[in-house]
Length: 361
Figure 1: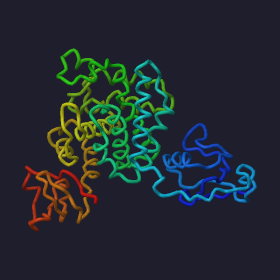
Figure 2: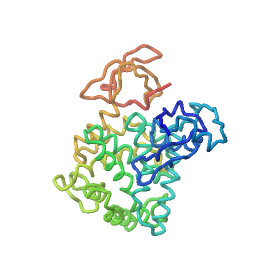
Figure 3: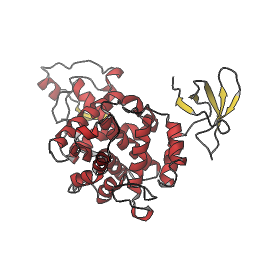
Figure 4: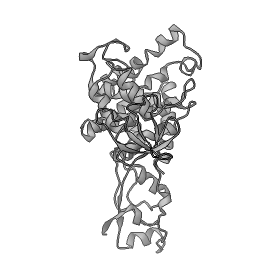
């Protein structure tokens, strides 16, 4: 019986899968002889699988479909968007986190399944990371933060030139960096008023709890376990839990640290409104100077401030304009031609203002 590999966009409902389909998973995500349906489309799209093996001679189709092939083309709108896949991943991660609270061990295979579909999308289109703060909300912030840190860590790792395997490992490290928060009482973790000194001390222990939860995972590299333990350390010794300094802090810990801070500062929290990606990256680069590896910060700056000439932006004073020139020494502060007046506005000289967002439509 012959097989052909059909692009997902041309696949018809009712066709029969001719081989087990894997996606970096131990078991198939779709088994051989499965009749293709809309639900399977969502699974394939989530794992970024573009071609599917199906039977071609009709024998298997007719056996399983009473000699009738369902001639229903898949509409483009049925293909899951990033937002839908993201929301699904957040719900899965939330369930895992609740399991950890109840004493369950970290399931690394589940963690991979949660983050890989998003990772495929983000590594193909890095600009997605600048919309992550739009998806987060104060109530479920912790779950959004873990997923967001994973995705931002992955694009920084990719920008720094790490191979796909290490990039995936860094993403999983980012996802699990705060798993130890499940061991902190919700009364402290979710407190909306100022924490006491004793409560801060408990929060500062979460990297230790996280490390203890991942230390026996054989699939996770030891360097990533170390990064999880160190992701709140700072190069100047001001971090925790050990107050390590430059030579003793791994590059992967720094990648997760920068991603962690960037996502936290751009998202809305119970006690703070969200801030512009451009403003945050400047704060990390300037006011936090000396705490983070400059190569890591520079990689994130290059990602955030990759503004082609002609990009339409909105400034912090709500004026809109077009990027006319980008200074490589200050990429977050280009020359902007204001839409209303045609005036050339130099953000390098007018530092009170900053780019609040990129206009994409």
